[in-house]
Length: 113
Length: 114
Image 1 (cartoon, rainbow over the protein chains, first blue to last red):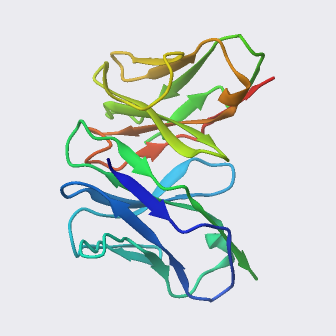
Image 2: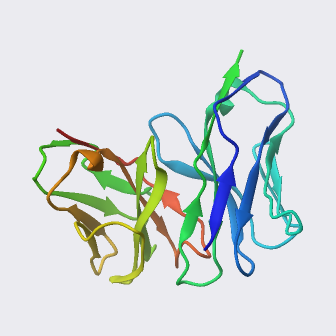
């Protein structure tokens, strides 16, 4: 079945550091891929998405590229801020209405001033 | 446009009791999904409803059930509560379904079972 494997946390970085959070997936067909972010005390928010191979999703300085050859969707940001501290979830959705969305285990990110 | 609302926000129940949680989706959204979030298991899919019909179901026991009304509002019910049911329950709505549309999440209902 479909699955998502995400980099274990927590990840602690200094402000303005480069961020990478790894995400790999297993799926049949051509799933859509997502990154969601959860700030303390809130529900999840969609950060970015990609629906086909080689698509790059981007938002708020974050980027992720759908790599079918490596089945990966790594999240990157060139210069993180304290306000980026949150839990990040990689997710996968199949192409039919019968498919469920699968979330990774989440990676907690803490940014030091 | 108002976001997804969930009520109540916090709930404390005793083992063996039952509980009903409510979710009001964004206006116009026909799909509502429910998730359980715990520190140990992460975010797990419970079920998805679309136009009052359950379209998808996760791997949870029959004690977990849900329904959707004609106005797309959804409720989930957990019967015979166990300590392990303590979790944050998140509801998410989307236009046509989680497989093709962005999901918008509510703030969750924090359930504590004692």
